[in-house]
Length: 268
Image (cartoon, rainbow, N blue to C red):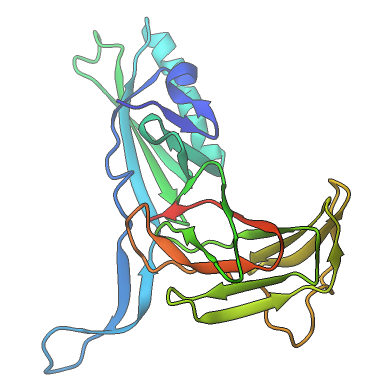
């Protein structure tokens, strides 16, 4: 069975924890649409978008030592996981993906006969407030031109890319299109970028900022570069809940000679 990493620590190496059952850790989170029930009407009516609840899963395995004292020591160290708060969790059979969760319980049950068996069965209970798996490494996707915009690889959860535009270009434009090529939004930046310059536009709802890198690896924040009246701030990419790994978002293009969108794909 696969090894488990919690907060980057290999539980098998550090605590002697041997995973025997992943439980529902890799199951898809359930999308529950908001719904209403009308008296005398059979069934229910969907009244709003889907809601994704907290994901809870249990990793079961065992801890064994050469003596009872060694086993107890390993188990005590394993229970410290409940004190770490939110941590990253990975499994060896999907080592490129991780989920952030909180270990809420470490339950141990002695194997029978208790006085002869130094092995202890353990259940690690994890709750993930944001129930999405994401790639450990962010994906860098090349932006297309305005004439030939590029589709963005999609997971089943929404993301907010960092959009990078590279010079040389004057007043670079970034545009988003639907799958038919119809323009959805446009952003024009008032700046002249040299061959060694770049712009970084962070599209997160909680960090919508613009950074300029002028012949330097050190960025300077300048949110005044978006031309007033020339469009909107670059939009996040909203998933359509597709579960297929190779699905794609609508198109993004730029007038800059080159650019990339950097984000991790995410899955329920």
